[in-house]
Length: 603
Figure 1 (tube, rainbow, N blue to C red):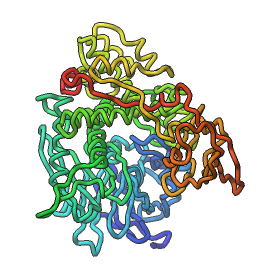
Figure 2 (figure 1 turned 30 degrees about the horizontal axis):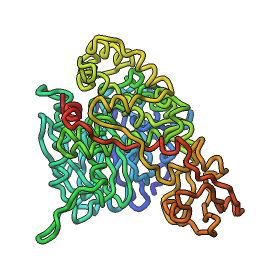
Figure 3 (figure 1 turned 180 degrees about the vertical axis):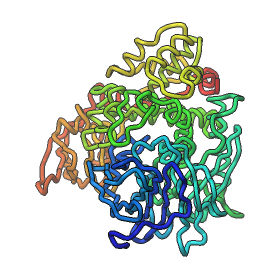
């Protein structure tokens, strides 16, 4: 590592104005990026700040905890830096000479939210590595990314505008302002690459870490269908508001997630869920649930290109990167996107009606099996995302509801209500909102105004009940009007008892749901459920699904043998079903395919 007061590295490109960065992959094994910031015309006592969060992931992640060795120079001499708070520094320099900062960033986060660097791959979001020069946020920004030594097969992919780069993508990129700079993640490594054009947009795909059996052609073909469906949804035959888009997918042994950006997305998926090629004599690969889930993730993040990155809450018009940015509209921006991500798979021809109803059933059951839906409205859940949804614990299902899943069901109810009345559809509402807000900031009042304009009546009462109260949604009634029956289904042991367990060997309790049989028995999160005692003897319980094996359906009560804090407890557990035991588990059945098809098709 360099000495504490070593001079700044020489930059190959020093613009006369704006902000310029140089990124070096300093030490692959120590996971260290080296960053140099050049500011030609600073303010006196210039202040810098590193974001504390990344847009799209609503939690203060305090990225400054990974910044180290921050130093400043002016006129070739070191100057003093004073830290003002957790993520803000001020220099004591003057305004008559260029200012340079140098620092390192530790990068060992495998998620899509931060930064990663090792001997096999590099990735970073700008919010993790680029200090913000306060007062210069709207100035042009450039970044020079240096190719690592000894890695001739490594390439670079990003949605940043290339100014002067080599054949592998290393070199100088530009952005119109700081927001644009940090909204373009960067992938570096020996990745697989493919591309397609659709709807006037060039789509580049980059996949890192895939297994040798990976079928890139299948992924491209399916992703192209999704992108075409989304572009047609928003614009029909009109020209979309972008010309290039980049998918960055990191394949790992076990992982899932995505983060939207204005002209790109970062994804993470399990290798086993990617499509696989097959050789002569081998059976044709058939997509499983994991691949369908991945296609839904691709659809979700791509839909965000319009819904949250352009059409967005008015509170997000100007980001405050140092503090929470509160909004009550995540039920719309995440929830409605969650409604359309699976629906567009149907319209793209990637799942059929039965497959879609399977996905919708999962969403409905997730909401119905969350007691927190009766404690918190989905609007309040949006506002509380910073302290509840992104800081989940054993009580989270009892205290809050997901604005993703319930928001998706609010969208479903609106869509089915509008279609039943025959005046318009939610598709038309979304497109009218895009036009009304000019693809920019919006408020809930805009949603209400467009609903009234297109339907001919006010939907204020529905929004008040479905979004701002804890009342149940009229799912069964609305689905039935569109050829789908919602009926109670036999509950599995976890649902019947009202608990959730940690996957793996043995029965370790993760959550005890409010008002359930497990709570009444005194079971608690963290308990290890060892076995049960019945009138027929005692049994070791290695899987919760084995409970009916040892306690047949006519068993009214057992004694749960539980280990808690190294103490062994015997807890009486009622197993009698009761009249509402299975009410939180439903299934959907297609009763009128023609009627359902009019809802599921594009309109």
